[in-house]
Image 1 (cartoon, rainbow, N blue to C red):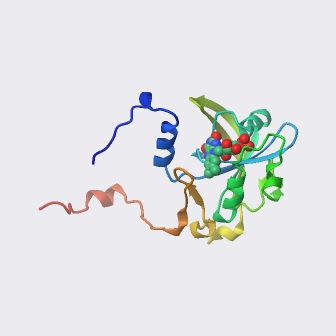
Image 2 (cartoon, rainbow, N blue to C red):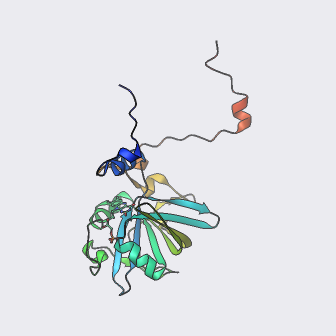
Length: 209
Ligand SMILES: Cc1cc2nc3c(=O)[nH]c(=O)nc-3n(C[C@H](O)[C@H](O)[C@H](O)COP(=O)(O)O)c2cc1C
């Protein structure tokens, strides 16, 4: 048994997708709420998602191809990233179905909305956290359309906070793995303090002699 090489030029069908999404794991999930030009509420999960800058706060999610979320975000310049805890996993998954653009996905998933403070799209009321964003820019690379969002407001449910911080066990986030697999990321926690250079350089070499 050894390591196998895959040349991107030789990948067939959706092999590239399967390799990328099963190796780059676990991925956080941006549950993006947006409004269509006609005011229809849309919400859809995007696991190509991460923080870009914390000062000022900027994040991104990527739409593979042109989906309703991307169309709405391009038109309005606004969206909300809702954070997905285990308590809303089923609802999140339902909103990944390919609803026609005129369907209200909050209604289909029986999700209550809550008004955002700084943007028009509402947030998912039961989500433990939300980032209200305006579009900074959209960068298209291959089949990915990366939406960068300037964060205008951050909302956190006090129920997931302990000692003034978001507690991983209370947030109970889910992460996306390959295929249809997910992980409850806070179920198997371990802690490692980041060492300083001073501590590392004076460490005895345990392999020696
Ligand atoms: C957990 C999860 C993560 C997903 N991540 C992405 C993603 O990063 N980018 C994407 O384009 N689609 C992603 N999808 C698929 C979209 O959610 C799906 O195509 C959805 O119908 C898009 O909705 P919309 O057309 O209302 O925007 C994901 C689906 C699931 C279940």
